[in-house]
Image 1 (cartoon, helix red, strand yellow):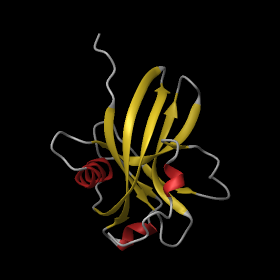
Image 2 (tube, helix red, strand yellow):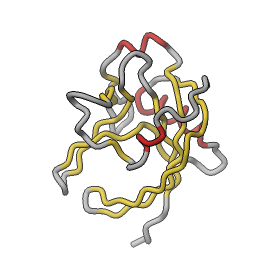
Image 3 (cartoon, rainbow, N blue to C red):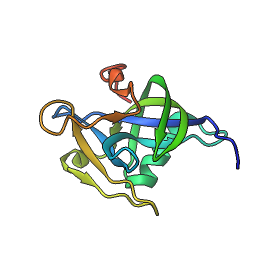
Image 4 (cartoon, rainbow, N blue to C red):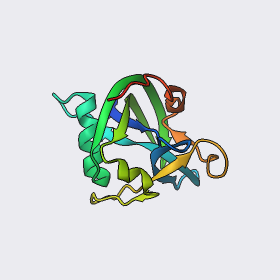
Length: 148
């Protein structure tokens, strides 16, 4: 059995311009019986920049184009998911949906073989109680408020 590896991933922090919400995928950890939300994005390939990985991943996951802005920060994520240990170095980028009309949608159906559906996660009020992973990403909200 191969030893676990540290994975470098790039995630998009997409804030809704008219509501206090961010775009996330929905997840469930069966081992802990926990529903959660996670920022969208994924693995950075060798020779690929983090911002390019964000663009590619959102196109692959939910079929949308994003304008990637500033690198907001890096988070180290050591976790257990479905009983398996994981360790990620997480590059978090501010991003905006390239098509403003998409902000009117409440749901984005996943288009990969292992679909990742996306929704707007309320930052306050009803629906805000679910945890957002990786831990620490919500601390980056409002950082680098410049256009992509």
